[in-house]
Amino acid sequence: MGQEEDIAVCEYGVCLVDCPTGSVMLGQFRDDALRTRLKTLLAQFPPAEVLLERSTDAQGGGASEDTVRVVEHMCAGALVSGEGEEREED
Image (cartoon, rainbow, N blue to C red; front, side):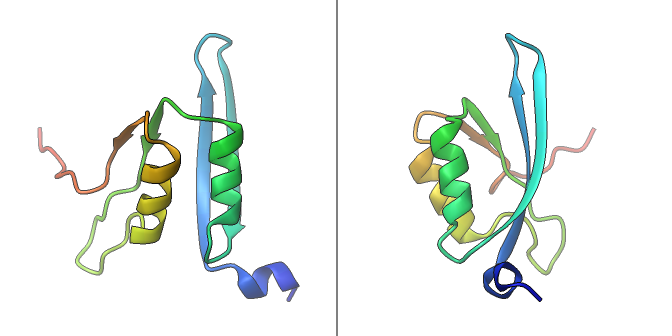
């Protein structure tokens, strides 16, 4: 095991979309307890909208409270969707 794997406490999957240019970037990374890489990503690519994973089961799942806190702080001007919303049935 590498040192990075020893300190990773969460894992993120991200999709960055630049509508004017039509470019899409996908990525996945592990992060530490301070969410250092997530904060760096949000600082380098300030989003207009953030979609968070919602809890889909009784065990919780979804975005952690720490992740939501970082997103709310780093993306104050962005539309944040997903956390705390109820899924609408068709």
